[in-house]
Image (cartoon, rainbow, N blue to C red; front, side, top):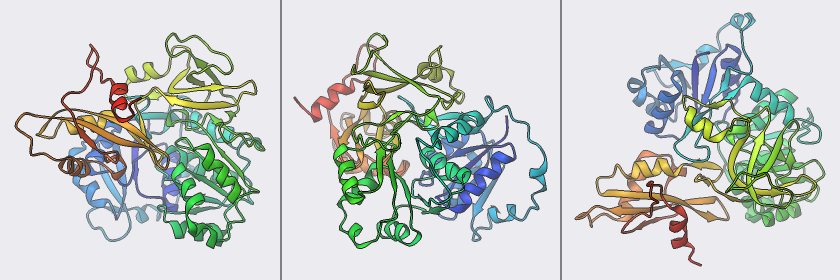
Length: 463
């Protein structure tokens, strides 16, 4: 297996250059959120056994902070010219390229190409092994003319984060394969976002629901000429049908829809067919993909209209979780079906619909927030003896993380603000407790000690 190279930078043209260079040389890329704290970065570097790290000037200090704590790390590169503490990425571009003339031996179904991190259906973030076969498969599946027919005439907006599998595969790699220019944005800024669409005549926008809300609600939108847009596809979290309808009103001639998937399927399983206008549906399985609904209680296969857990099988299904056979076996069964932890149903025409989640994962603006990660962190606070985190649905951002906290005796002086500040010191902003903090006498658990999250949600939404 090749050496692992962690890319820890915001969206840029160099992101794709670095990614393709690493994999062309036989390496493996693990993508890290550039807003990660040093602690979060250290966990991913250690877990992935990363040998090299590419950071940006904006986060190089966090990268340097963990250097001595990651034994596998040999060298840090910085995207910029202001740091003397490590090597410059630009120096790598001075090479004559002769190395890439040498053939690299790859076993496509076995060798990882990229290691994004996901919490899956539960637990802490885990390395998702996506092989060369997985990624090549999903690119072919997605660029099918009935699914996502990119042409050289299209201009794609690169606003989705490239460290996320959605942005990396669908925006970066699919566009490169199809020869489409990509207008790269380091992050979402409303006026710059709209200016980019107008100036570069963007035709394709892949986005997460919060940006969809912006497009239908912000008065800024009407000040720009966005008539070039022909396709808007949403993913990473559920898009409310009413928002999709409003988007169609704003962009009457554009294809509007939402897909469905997860990092573990590279990351797409369903997309509406070209010409479909079923705003409540997440579409049909992409080519070479099988999906079924099974009973949550007994696992029996269900028919059209019956609600149950969604299972997926196809060439884009991950090889497994890195160094975690137990989590892998809990997610992919002996017959190769990936258990998503999502509840849905399908109709006679094979269109799938999402209903609920049975997994613990919280989705905030398309980002994954693992309750277990925040709970472990809360338990490190000297005044807290027990904690649980649940997601509170929010129409704009998906879910808000809310904590239920049990305070140790004689620690009554602690306040919710103190807890918020403690969390903010250790994790990226999207993992903050945006849903608030509630002090409780105890955390409800079953006989085996598992948190009964449904009882906590009942406190928020009493019947």
